[in-house]
Image (tube, rainbow, N blue to C red; front, side, top):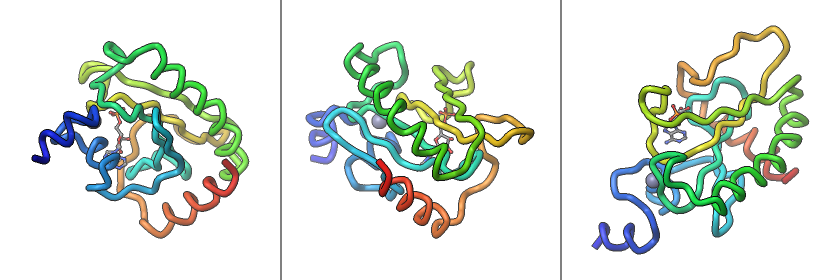
Length: 146
Ligand code: AMP
Ligand code: ZN
């Protein structure tokens, strides 16, 4: 049954981001509509590190439709200034990896938005799990400004 529900919704069984979309795994959700969802990265590079994903499962960019790509891109334009303001960042890194060879570790297409401070080391992947309360606090601030 689970399998069918997922298939009908464009979700893929066993995919952690699809489980988040289905409400079966927790996330600090920032935004969701029919086309995209956005939530905080659980292992952030910096405070406010966010992921934007399509609500239909795609492993990577290679199968994403133009419409889905446009929806992700539009939302990145909306989110970036909010992240910059809330985290007092000097810049926002936008990163998107396709395939293990490129460093992709979760195979549901996603775009990273990573607030960056001048002089701080640049990375795409964090090294430790964030404190849940800190994630909840920053998520509330971001949601209030979206
Ligand atoms: P990538 O290497 O581009 O595929 O990035 C995958 C990202 O997903 C990493 O930054 C992980 O920290 C993040 N991630 C993995 N599992 C979760 C989760 N359950 N909730 C939020 N972020 C996650
Ligand atoms: Zn998925």
